[in-house]
Structure formats: C-alpha cells, structure tokens
Length: 418
Image (cartoon, rainbow, N blue to C red; front, side, top):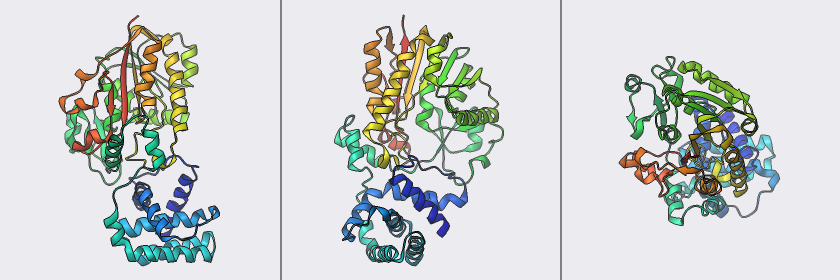
C-alpha cells in the first residue's frame, strides 16, 4: 500500500507545482483503484483540507518541503474521508516523508496527522462541500452569477458514471444500465471496460452524455462530406460514420490518431481519410469543400471537473484566453473549406463563455453570411433548459442533476447562407 501512496504523492506534487495539468490513470485497473480514489478525493476536498491544515500548523513548511505538504494533504484525506485505519495512514506517510526528506519533516507530519486523527469527527461534520478555490471562482465570474457558480460547484462533485453510445438497441439491452434522453446509456461499472458485453464485437463505445450531444444536433448527415477537426479519439467520428457520413478525420497528434484508428477498427468503421496535420495549416492549404465541418475545438477543458478535479487547481484565466485565441484562429479559417449552404458544428468541453457563447457571437458579428441554427427543436423537453436564448446548447453540470450529472459543454450550429 505504501507504494500506491508514493505514486499519489508524486502525482499530487506535480499537479500542485503545475508540472502536470491532468491526473491520468487507468481507473479500471484494480491495482490503481486505491490511488485513483485517493487522488480524486484529495483534489475534490483540497480547499477544505488546506483550511484544516492552516488551523493546525503554526509554522510554514518551506517550499523545499512540498513532500511534507503533499503527505499532509493525502494523509488528511485518508483519515477524514476514506476510513483507513489511523495507524496505517500515519505510519505510511511518516515513513515516506522520512525516505524523501529527513526525520525532522517526518516528525512534523507525524504530529499534525495525529492531531487530525483525534479530531476527524469534528472535521467531517464541519465540511461545507467547498470545491472551487477563489481563483477558479474568479475565472467563472466572467460567465456566471455567484448563485450559478455555487450550483456548478456542488454538481461538479458528483461521482461520474460510465456513459456509452450504442450502435443498436440489442447491444444496449445486453449492457443494461439507464437510458438517458437522446439515447446515451449510463452504466455503473466497476472493473475493466473491455470485459463488458460485446466489447469485442464493437457495438458500443465510451462517450460522456455531453460529448455525445453535438452530433445529435445535426440533421441527416447520410452521404454528406464531413471534415472533423481535432477528431481523436473518435467518439464523434463513430457517431457520424454510423449515420452514413463520409468523414475526413484530422488531428495534429499522431498518438491520438493511433487511438482513433484502434477505436475505429474495434467498431468496424472506416473514415474516408485520416490525416495527421495541424488543422490551421490544413485549412489554409486545402482546396476541398465540405458539407459539414465539425470543430471540437481545443479548450481549457473546465467542463470535465467531475473526472478531473485537478483542473480547478491548475487552470487560470491565461489558459482560457490562450485557448480562446486558438479557437478564433480556427474559426477565421473555416470559411474557405465550407460549402455555401454548409454547416459548421462548433463545440468545446469548457464552462467558460469566452470559449463558447462569446466566441461564436464575435464570429457572427464578423461574418454576416452565417446564421445561427436554433437547436431548441433538437432537444427534448427535459433538456430544454440547456438551450440558450440564442439557440446554442450550454450544458452545465447542475442542469443534469436529475440523472446523475454531466460534463460542462457548449454547442453551436452555424449555417453558411451565402
């Protein structure tokens, strides 16, 4: 167990030092289950745990002793939230710190963790569910009211389940689970995804409810020539192909495209073309014209907080603005590759309106030959609150509380009229 705690400690250290933006681990590997649960809990509770440590520590640990700081955060997480025996937690982290630093820091960690162990019932009852640091709240204030941010914060702590998209009703019945509006299937899965029914037959793929929405907003795509920018890992590609579209997949990352190829092979689907190239360069140089362009734009990923709670601790306004600049560059180059009468489907897994509503409104102001396609008629009544007054789709985690939560997402359909 100490080895797993060592992995968690190094990961947390990298995240807090902003050397690692996203915590990634195979959550279906049983050997990693402890580290996964420990890290996700620590990151969701980090704001509160820091406030606890602040009351207990009278002197500052130096920056050189970041190992001690991380050990205290992880130790407090286990003691308060994971019901690990006190002696196992304290001994493990004290020994880890001793190995990595010295006996003085280890002694300090020992003393603080013992205080937490004695008062853990008090700390549990005093937890008000704080998740977002002030810096992250400030980032969201450009888009939402204080009450809206509070709702997003609360709903973002829902533990995500596994959502899949099925090719047939038969495969959905074999998997079981709960069918959500517009067809996504939600499963409670513990264990390896590859061991679920019909995995090898390629009749379904993993795709969050929100990520599956954009392609569902398109009208009939059968026989349509589609350019999918930033296509990997291929969830939207699979949706388009199963609906009969002729898809050209493009992504700048060779590794991510290899994953797309693996996914398409398992699903027995074949895109027209798979191109590894910078999307901006491709748009500059191509002479092809497409009926539909799908731009799942690079973004801050602030909508994926349920699976990646570290985002609230590492993403800044600068990150949002850098991505917004890149999105604008893509949008400025779309026109030459889109047929008159064609459709641009733009989406991001961001909560920030700078990467969604504000971005598209600016595009429309600068491109009078494009009009918004109102998506209200594409959404069932139980999801109507996700449609904005302009006709965009804005998914907030709190809009999906009734069925267990969803990632934050933005979707716009824009038609080239002339």
